[in-house]
Length: 330
Ligand code: SF4
Image (tube, rainbow, N blue to C red; front, side, top):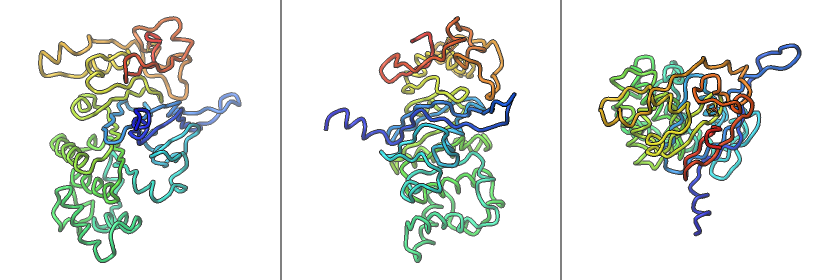
């Protein structure tokens, strides 16, 4: 097998020039849109943990929901395992739905409070015919054990459980179909700090054991340092920078990335030395309905130049595997 074929086979998800716009009325007869995702290119390789990081409103969850088919793309394509799946979920094949799963941020609103845990876990098993009818209960017990919950939890309702336990049920439900790719949409940010580490460790163990690929959405860069294979930064609907994790933290290139990294608290002197010097942003995040021309970060960027206010930069490969979208490197 040549290296090009091998590399192509490694890619499980390829998002090409993806745009997801939402209409928000008109101004002087001109339609206005929130450009939540605006021309995103992203690849995720089989077996990796891709960390997708951005502030609130950066478009990272909209990107996830578009990949899942919850939102329809305005433009662009989503290629999953070599197949174009750029259509709403209702028009996707059962096998795509089986292989592509999501864990939502808030387990409280993603689990039906009127159903028992057994009913919640049974549904994907039946829809995707994972086991025979007679073996369903046994499989539900297996799923509960997988997320370290005792079998009697199958009779509970999600409302009688804590946030951490509800998220364990969400993880069990997502993994019930034996998926290959799981989107984790801030899976611990709604939980108590005390339970976050337990959930993260469980997710890592399951990823290794079941050879899963994760797209891990978060605003927590420190967490990505410890668990991601690669890190991607998103700002106002666009990707700013993507790099392998070690390279990303050793040599961040985009001014926005450096701004994010410079504000992470560190515990040791060694880490403090590696941290970029404090980068002071000069303005507010613009409204996503009215993104300025040129580089969307230019109103906040301490390194902006004349060209940044007029020309939207394009992605360049500054180092092998290290991509950045900034005029400082074009
Ligand atoms: Fe800053 Fe210009 Fe780079 Fe945008 S393109 S991040 S404004 S230097």
